[in-house]
Amino acid sequence: MQLLRISTLCQEQLAKILDDVDLESIEECYLEMNTTEFNLGETLDAVVMQGMSLSTKRKVQIVCDLPDEISSMDLYEDNLRLQQVLSNFLRNAILFSPVMEDSSVAPSVIPRNEKIRNGVDVVHLKFKIDHPAPGIPVALV
Image 1 (cartoon, rainbow, N blue to C red):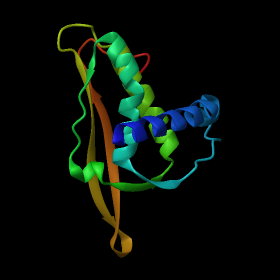
Image 2 (tube, rainbow, N blue to C red):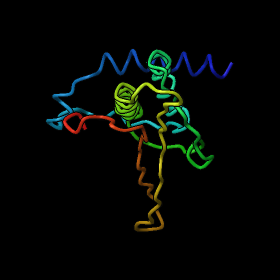
Image 3 (tube, helix red, strand yellow):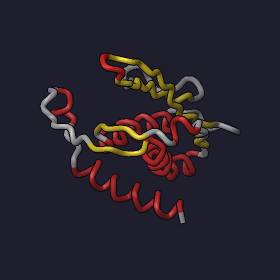
Image 4 (cartoon, rainbow, N blue to C red):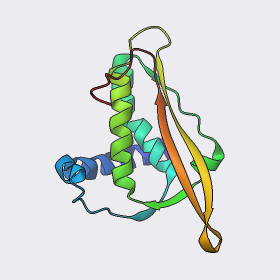
């Protein structure tokens, strides 16, 4: 049941990521962000689900084992933009991974907490996707 819910969420969000793509506006910093509260674990599950079809076709496994700290993290940010960017990175990592036995890509998130004024906590997240060499060409990175 959880997989069906994630798949449906993924399809709905992808339909929105596709209707709302405007890279020129992003590059020119004119794009308005749609900030909402969301669960990071659910977003990352949707990103992985979006990469599954290509992963299966290319025979490149997606290995994503997130700690509970990340899976249960609630954020206030533009969820659809984040999902769009991460899905694009994952897709490129899969596309440029050599097809060989046990080939895999591994998305991960590294959090760094910071306390700012008045005891407010801010978390900085570093997203990375490990993949086999030669990997994504420098021009695309």
